[in-house]
Length: 399
Ligand code: PLP
Image (cartoon, rainbow, N blue to C red):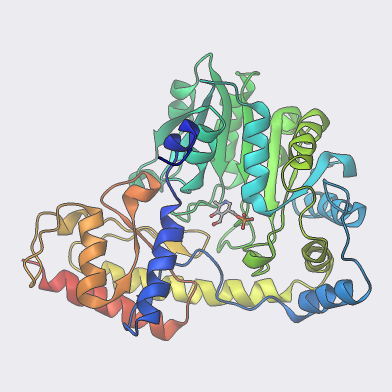
C-alpha cells in the first residue's frame, strides 16, 4: 500500500477539473464534444498585460519577491479595494498568492482548529468544503433555493451559527448559480454577523467584475464594523482572463495576513514574479477589455437562458453575474432516453447527455445541489446555440 495520509480521505479531487480533463481527452480521441463546462473566460489575456510580463522577463524581474508579493502589486491591490469598494487597506494588510484558491487555503489552514465550523451557503464552489475539511474544519451547509434567487436568507444564516462557528464563507457573485448580492441584499446578513463577534467572514469576490445589473457589493463596504474580522478575497483570473497566471489576492486584518504569510513562506513562497508584473499591469491599466467581455457574456446569457427554458423539463433562472447558468432538470427525472438509459439523478442526466449528444455539463451534486446542472457560457455563441439545441433535442426525446 502506498503511504497516503488519512487527511486525504477527507477530500475528493476537484470534479470540475475532472470534467475539463474528460472533455479534453474525448476531443483528443476525435469525438465531437461540445464543452460548455469551462470555469474560465474564453477571452485572451489583454495585450498590455502580456507585454508587461514579457518586459518583466527581459528586465530581469525573474527572482524571488517578498512572500506576500511585490510592494508595487500590494499597493495596486490596496488602491483597487479603495477605488472599487471604498475600503481602506494598508499595503501590509494585503497578500498576493497563487490564485484565490491559495488565499483560501492559507486562510483556512491558518485559522481552523479541529472541528471548528465554517458556514457555506449552497450551491457552492466545489473547493470550499474540501479546503475547510483539509484544514480540519467542518463545513456546515446552508441551502439557498432557486425560489429565493439562490441567495442566503438572514434567518438561515442566524440558525446555522453555533459556538463552534469560525467562518462564514460568501461567494458574490456565486459560482455556480450566478446570484449576485447587492448592498441591500447584504445588509441583513451583516446585521446577523454584527450580533456574533466571534464569526469571521471570507468574502470571495472573484467574479465581481462579471455582473449585469448593479455592481455587486462586498461585506466591508456595506458594514465597515466587520472589517476587523473579514477577509476580502479577489484576483485577476476571471476579470482579466488570466486563469493560467495564478494571481489571487486579499485584504485582511494584519494578524491574519501575517499568519498567512508565515504559512505561504513554508509552502510556495511568493507566487510567480512574472505573473505579479502582469497582474500589476492588469490592475493599473485600461479596463475597456472588461466592458467588452461582460457585454459579450450578457448576450450569451440571454440566448442560453431562453433556449434552456424552451427545453421540456428544464427551468433556468436568469443569473445576475458570472458566466454560468444553473438550471433545474427536475422535470427530466425518472424518464428514459431513446437508448434506454433511465434519468435517475443529475449525474445520470449529464452522463447520458454526453454519451448521446456530446454535450459536456457539470452535474449539480458537485456543487451540493442535486437535480441541477451547471452550463458555462464562456464559449462562442455558435457552440452555445448548438449545445442548447442538443439539450432541447435530448429533453424532447425523453419518455
Ligand atoms: N473562487 C471561485 C468561486 C471560483 O469559481 C474560482 C475558480 O474557478 C476560484 C475562487 C479560484 O480562482 P483562482 O484562479 O484565483 O485560484
